[in-house]
Length: 185
Ligand SMILES: Cc1cn([C@H]2C[C@H](O)[C@@H](COP(=O)(O)OP(=O)(O)O[C@H]3O[C@@H](C)C(=O)[C@@H](O)[C@H]3O)O2)c(=O)[nH]c1=O
Image 1 (cartoon, rainbow, N blue to C red):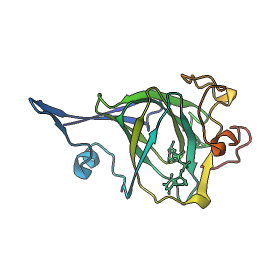
Image 2: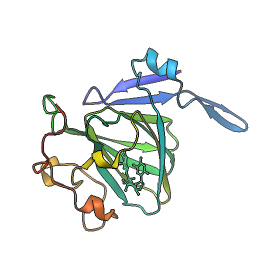
Image 3: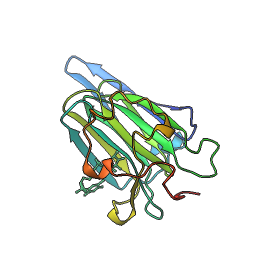
């Protein structure tokens, strides 16, 4: 029913739900607490978020919330497609400063599990891309943090040039990885 596989940073996981297709279309359980817990994913998701980005090349990120409001996220795409990026900010981690990226779209029934201690962001690959994600801590603007998405030190291969990306003014002004004070132990 539920396939879970680790990515190059093992705490970052892809989750695929079984799709039941018939003449009408399909049915899919996208979240069942007990099934996720059996696979070792036992976050208590308490808030659902949805964003729609109109243009291809829209970048949102790289975002995190500082402790004690750090969030794990379970991300999926309802319409369109994204390149989703997860950056390890855990200072004691062997993969501190490293990232993984994965394509998510509305057809592959895959969700990305972003643990606490990571920054998260994405770039849209199609117009009108709608992203839906569950989080296990409430939004707290006072604990909002981020890393500049195109920081060359991160060596993230984005599908859009920095000069052509569509970003919020807030994301344009985020600190580079070097400028970021230690956030997660
Ligand atoms: C994230 C968030 C924002 N907001 C409000 C604040 C603001 O007025 C408006 C837009 O917020 P932002 O510009 O931060 O939205 P956005 O850039 O889409 O932020 C999101 O980016 C992705 C990559 C994530 O991983 C999320 O955790 C979140 O940080 O929505 C909430 O009310 N609740 C929330 O949980």
